[in-house]
Length: 66
Image (cartoon, helix red, strand yellow):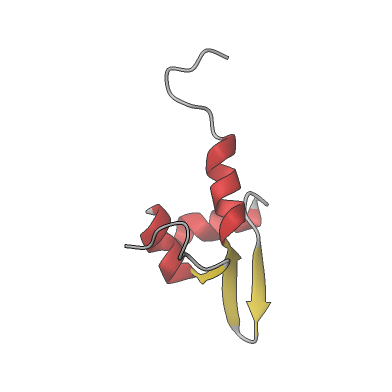
C-alpha cells in the first residue's frame, strides 16, 4: 500500500483505482465532468493525484451541518 509521501504526482488509472477505490468508469466520469485532471503521455493517461485528493476534500462530510 502506498502512503501519500511515496505516491506519484501523476499516476496510471489502475494505480488510482487501487489507491482511491474508484472504478475505472468512475475515473472517466470524473474526468469528463472536470472533477479531476489528467495528462496524456504518449498513448497513456496519467491522473494528477492532487486533483483526486482535492476532489475528495471538496466532498461534504457525513453528519456535517451545512
